[in-house]
Image (tube, rainbow, N blue to C red; front, side):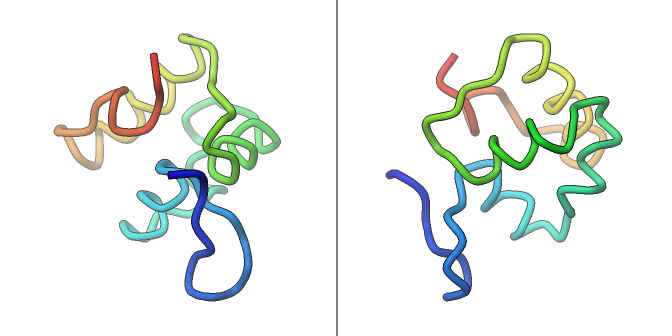
Length: 78
């Protein structure tokens, strides 16, 4: 599925974007993973944007602190 307009406000969301929206995690909070704001914005907005392994690892390690069941495959095609 290629993006999704979330809550009818017209912004496209990727699997990662939908996940953080559903779990009340802001993109700003996700920056604490050590990933830049611009990269997080792209990853949350564009399903076809794939991170480097290093970037994906930072995001997954951050999210695992909140939900130990998250996995790379939940968000990225690695």
